[in-house]
Amino acid sequence: MKAIFIVYNQAYNQEIVELLEDCGQRGYTVWEEIGGRGTETGEPHLGNHAWPTQNHAVLTAVDDALVADIMDRLRATDRDNPKLGLRAYVLPVEDAL
Image (cartoon, rainbow, N blue to C red; front, side, top):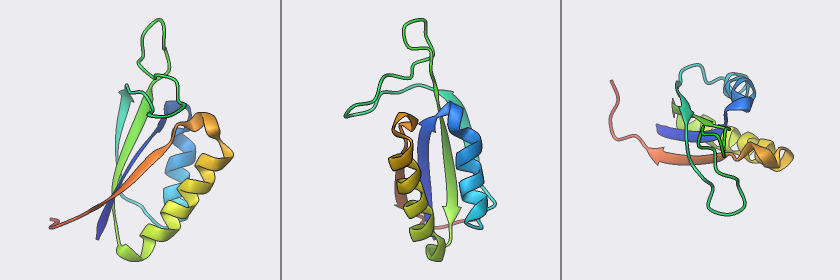
């Protein structure tokens, strides 16, 4: 089992949730209205008067068999939507309840 941590522009929340559901991934946790700034070309998303946009983040625990499909779809979504500011990280899950 792996965990996928996904951060993206809040305007794309529905697209990210639908992507997970289309891959057969039902469970996830969402953090709303979080700030940050990309490391390369992204604008800050800080929720203030100068940078009003914010991010959301999703953490989902995924069976190993689904990881590649989800990551491939996230890469395609990021490529097709450069303003999305999407970042995704696959992390090992040592134990789960």
